[in-house]
Image (tube, rainbow, N blue to C red; front, top):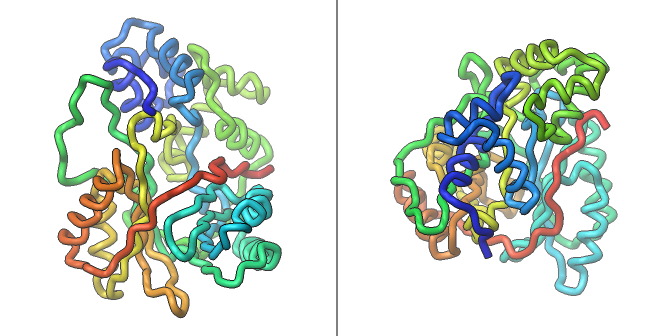
Length: 346
């Protein structure tokens, strides 16, 4: 059941999902944008976090630009082995998400590791330890969108007017500053960060302090200066290392009770156009092109969140008509077995 929140909360939730400003007093700036009294933004955000509507509040980084590589794995888990298999998978620190989905392959997890060689080692080790008779390893070839942003409106409000397109930041669309696609399988120079920079990344990922001057509090905890922290974060934001500082809400508590991983079979010549068009839809939070191993024909993946399964089906059907592709499946989430953030440079 969705938790209660008012219209001012919904305005604020929409703003802080988009971005928390990289300024000395971000809450004051957000209060002005949300038409709130000075100091009210911080008070409301603290309350929303205490109530559990905000899952996480901190830095959202591009893992590839930090030197990490990732993959999506799917397993066929017999009913009597789901919990045992989940225990093995969830014990890996690099597993950030693990869900059961309504499909023959009913357990889906994401795995991140510091470098391609370590990713391949951990993937094979995990497969061996899980002992599944059927599994898929689905590394990304490129990504078109990673942007978890749920339009929020309070009880009594109607939804925001439907828009046909969504302006996706290049950093959310898997592109470098020049607009060229960045692929996940390497090809980039490995970044180098100082120990102080690594500590800053880890601290911001752990969470933004809920104080009037959060970046000053963050800097003080690291023995650094506020202006140096803001300068580093601003530079990383421009470079795409830092996608944004923002809030990640608990989507079920703000009314999005259904989600489906939609897997598409798209001819290679149409992937670029179809992927970008799918990514332009606001209900799509993630959109990837992935490897398609033998026996698994799907190569484009779009994550859809909605208020009901019927809404998911309708949105997927509308998207299929838009891109002219009829071969797809919806894999509905059933249980959240793990959802966390990777601890970079742990």
